[in-house]
Image (tube, rainbow, N blue to C red):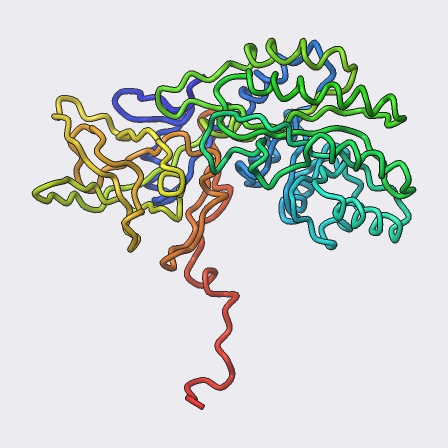
Length: 422
């Protein structure tokens, strides 16, 4: 299902006119399709049905409580990387036994809370982290379950900022260091190894890098079994790509068919941590044109959204397709830069793209904004955070209200000395 389609010249999310949402909630605003979230999750779940598996949605892609709740109700577990994401997952109704906690810098407070609620396991990345979890588990009179994140040194051919599985990256342990860490864990009473984990990068178009990485980890699993380390889970992370422009990512079926022969012989429960794959194309950022500024060299379409609402183009040079919400028939094409109002030259969404002639006051939809958009937002230039809207059929609900100026400054405190200069 394509959740965003034009009907009678107007773009809809499912059965709701985006212009109506803009009229009622204002712009900029994020709009998500509930049906698209559920269907995308279901595609992957069905494709993997022949093997024991659990899909752990990656909260860092889009951690809105309503999005989390939608996927939890569909059967997903949650992959978290912070205490805040753990809190959100629990508040949205996640079963702690379907939560894994990843990340290279877990604090003592985060570890203690995760042990308290009884998560499935920690993904750990260092000896120091294992020792910290062991100490916290001993104090809590419990056992800290873990999987080591193994860095298989596989280059997934993606953007350098989102490559995570090579020897140059900060993530995980090489095979020998991981083997030594598992061996050491056997001597510690307060921790238990339950799995092996990897995550090699994001926005990957082909399953081939996964197959290559899995092939490097299979001998490790077999060796650990020979040493008495009994594992339950084989976690291959996330990173499955989506179409932003003209990419051709593997389908869920193609992905499953490629990796199943590699993991089935192990007899372990397969875990996956997709985020963008589920949420990316389920959302748009809705924005209104404030000005059309023409110079001798360029035409700038200035919109009310900005890089603080969708930073991917400025940060990664990422492409997000841009469409007019009301499709103008017969207008000539023009080459434009679509930019925001922030005082940075990097505040742009697209440069030198062709759009039908755009006019002030019209609505644009920045496509594929369901992942790594709202979650990466900031209040730079004292811009309040936009609302988030979830659509289901012909209904929609505001699932995060627009931040007010009062809320924006509510945590700041004027010092008691007031206007004194000394």
